[in-house]
Image 1 (cartoon, one colour):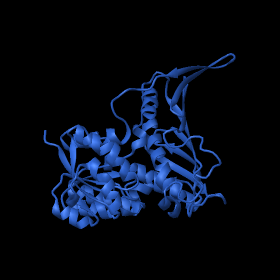
Image 2 (tube, one colour):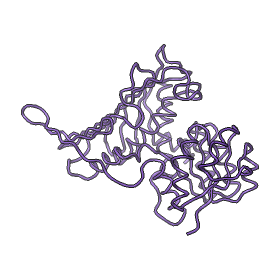
Image 3 (spheres, helix red, strand yellow):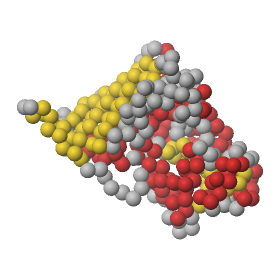
Image 4 (tube, helix red, strand yellow):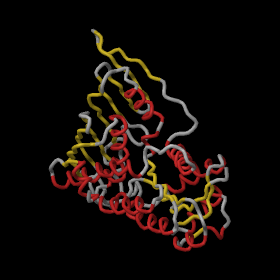
Length: 350
């Protein structure tokens, strides 16, 4: 089958990771190849060139020219969330499908606009919720949903980091409102949804920034959720702590099922059951597969465009994750719990 063709917008910073770790293997697999790349930084474009295997005349600092000059099947969006809608607009104007970094956009209003635009266009859009598709999280999800340990009662997550100094988590994250929720917690919300097998019904968030956190917005949060199936969730998130206990890919999750406790801590999963002298613990072997996270999601997207199954993080599902995210933001600002499903209905005008 002829490889699909794409235009990538954003090849610096995290986009550099995409070029090296996601798109080069995607080309070698024969699933998709680049026809053009866009970034406002010419040096970032040069660094991406060898991984995208593009000649210099296909590297653009002007997005409109790249889309006007090259036919493609889809666009890849790897720019800050506030810029997502403009890329989506030009991709849809050129009749392209869309593979986008999370979240859909930087506000619920923008997410709703993108949702309606894409749905009315008939094009496909997928959001790369990469951490949900990491090896340890997929193993934990399989254990919970396997049914061997009875129904799920509640889930706890800890995500704590020392990124207090300006720029240590990327400069733009230290400048934006609600950086922890928008750029971090959104991944963990999606993991909660996958572990519980349900969307969020209500959320209550308390967020703040300690005096030593060099952030314009809140970098710390304590959040409680109830899911539509009755499961409860609690989240501790921090970007300005003294130590990074459970940072990216090293998170702590504990799922309390009727017949066992399933604990994931820094990529190790243990099964715990009580005995007279304390819990009896058993290490669980992690699942095996060729790729995880963004490389796997990019493969899923290409397979979907070629007639394969719908991916879990398609737009129609991921709008639930954004509703939970921005309902949590509203809760943090108002000090009150938010009904997530009612918030989503109002946001979409349904």
